[in-house]
Image (cartoon, rainbow, N blue to C red):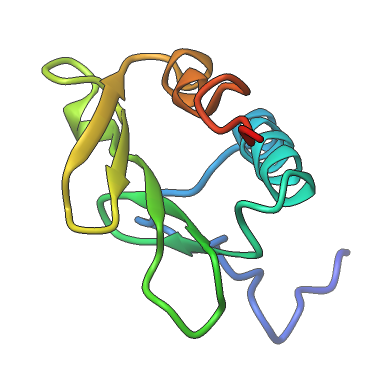
Length: 113
């Protein structure tokens, strides 16, 4: 006869949207490249009821420079992925994360001497 635990196993944040391992890896790859180039210094990850948000900062005490959002409910209409700039301007939308992350390509953020 198996003993039942006095504490039930908690559900992993039921009803919240999160990044999967592959998405998080792609986001952190871009983040690492931008940190190495001196553009970004900090990030935050939020799992919300309707979206998962990866925010990047120049300084930790500021508002985010960019928010990369995953909104599954928008997947059919506008695309699940959105990059939003500091003032709320939507820079890029798309169905695939890799396509949306091309916004942060090397040529756009190259240091010109």
